[in-house]
Amino acid sequence: MAAIDSTRTTYVSGGGFSALTNVLGAISTWNDARQTRKSLNALSTRELEDIGLCRGDIDDVAQGTFRV
Image (cartoon, rainbow, N blue to C red; front, side, top):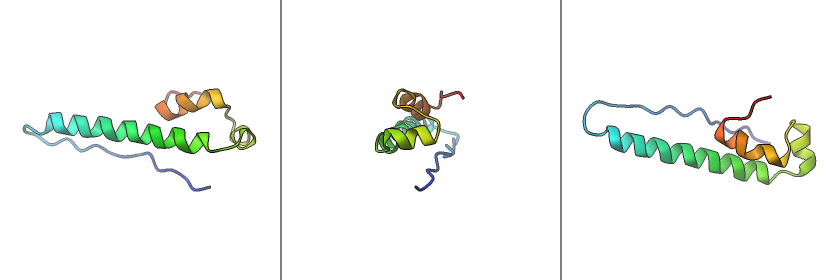
């Protein structure tokens, strides 16, 4: 299984583009969570157990709020 890189950096520039930058950052964050959910849901229950997760943990992992 390939590792998923979810460490994107949002660059904020001065001027009138900050609102656009915020919208694009929110879309990027949403898409990262969507891809994470999709990848984890594709795993079998056994595979999730192997990495210490259950199906109920998927949303927390995708949102970045999962705590061990």
